[in-house]
Length: 360
Image (cartoon, rainbow, N blue to C red):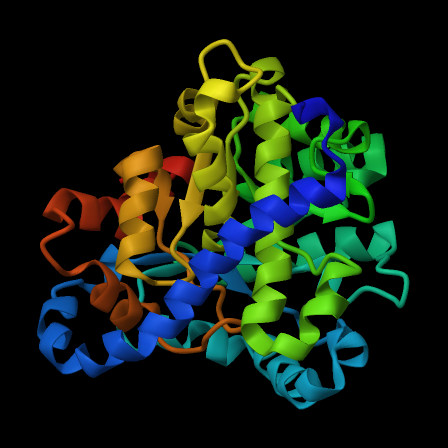
């Protein structure tokens, strides 16, 4: 029966779980804020050098942020403000300089500077990676770079991925989880994934705004748009697992956002129905990492229980989801009896360092 399910029905089913997860986090976050005074002392037990934010964005000033043009009218002013923040290098470093953060793993999302058709010229992508490498060189140990590539550009994308890792010294790849009707397991993206597996670098499979679902969900505000993004990120995760990409590329490791927790839950809950001989959950525990973007204790605990404490990385989606220091949000989320000291330390930075191959 599974082979007959239409892609849109599949997305809808995954999206239900993704939306539930996002809704839970957004509804209960005010309750967490009410308890902030009780947890603040505990959250401060994190030293600045103990936290690395795996999920941070920056757009060098010479690139125009076009996202405000295509954003819904109700979100246009927000995106205009975000464009200024994204281009401000001092703001990118502020939390590090203020002792709130040890380092950031930074990407330049191509989708934020894309044209009306969602495209970015290949020469621009190369220039983005050159600029990011220069940023890393200016702030060694404080900024780590994720090379942006158009994964759906076939062999040309793979060549740029290899250049960015081998020649520029960037430590991971940043790709869109979908493009139109294609998911990241598409043949067009395989050369990029092969390079990542060969070089032993992780791939951050980042959400996009899928259409028409995003347009359909815009009237429902932030939860609606996160539903759309979480749905397609979940779909990409399941496509990698059930499409047997990990079986074919045993060295491949990917990171998804917390918005994909619905896909994680579905793949785990239906693991015995997987096409894979050992079940989906075993494959994910070897190849899949997830960040903490939604900062909800129950969701982080579920991620640990499903993937293992060594496969969860601190990530805030700075400055798009929030420009607050991650130190406080992470502390509020994981400083209770559900988490051991070893789990907290691993999530805060240990897993990220190991994932990126940075000596400790």
